[in-house]
Image 1 (cartoon, rainbow, N blue to C red):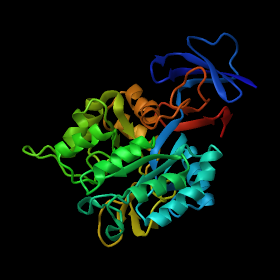
Image 2 (image 1 turned 30 degrees about the vertical axis):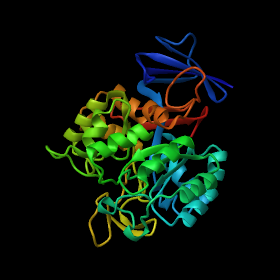
Image 3 (image 1 turned 90 degrees about the vertical axis):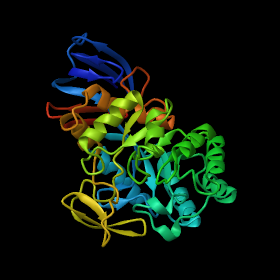
Image 4 (image 1 turned 60 degrees about the vertical axis):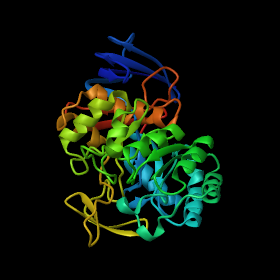
Length: 374
């Protein structure tokens, strides 16, 4: 099946074509050009901007469901909920639990990776700093051991894409080395690490900062800490949660501008995304969502977000004032590069035909995944 799509703008995101057109054959993009289409378009999106499908590398839930526990049906609900908001590629993030419980969840969710619904799996914990536990149950936090690392990597069977850990805990740097050797992205997060310890983690193979500024030692003028190390390291990708709760717009703008092509928008969404206020679970923790903000019940700590990537993109452009092409890059090509995902995150010949049509207000109006409108 061949489909020619024209649009007022095509954000590839390497460049912006205005106007532009995209040719889709089966599930792949086969041509992308600027100007009017060579024939009458099968789909005319003259009033829309066409962007790559969004890539969310850090998401826990949505649609009232969550990945925690490894229930495949719940995983399908999460993926389909976010797909409706333009996320065509996602990794399943699991919060801290016992190694045995996490291994079971990894094995259960592996089928969704094999089916192509998920692009991989992400462990956020259990090797985190108790000082910055956030929405992770403190008594489940442990120090990494070779046995636990190897067991979880084996349980995922090559599907584990990323692990977030605190490199300063005992065994942390060895864990970074072990994960990197296994082809797993090591991310620094939920950490009390010093500036020097973060640089040591990157020397050991780390490459990502998990939700920058949040759940980590803050910047101090005499102890720059992990934030400064991550912002200045030329190879560091940094996750940014663009919801106005986790980061002030000025801070979002500062970090995204400083990191240029290595800023990565993530939702860190929990079950309430796409649903609304109420009481939810985040792993073993109870979460209250009020006015769209998720907090631990009875405590007040932020517990993930209720974001969709569609809302994050709109916030980053409309509120933080970032250029649309940079924001699209942070929501597509950057996370794909960060996780080593091939064939997604850009509108390019040979890439999977994942497209999002945005109106003038940056609302998602149409979504294509693998050549089919959904």
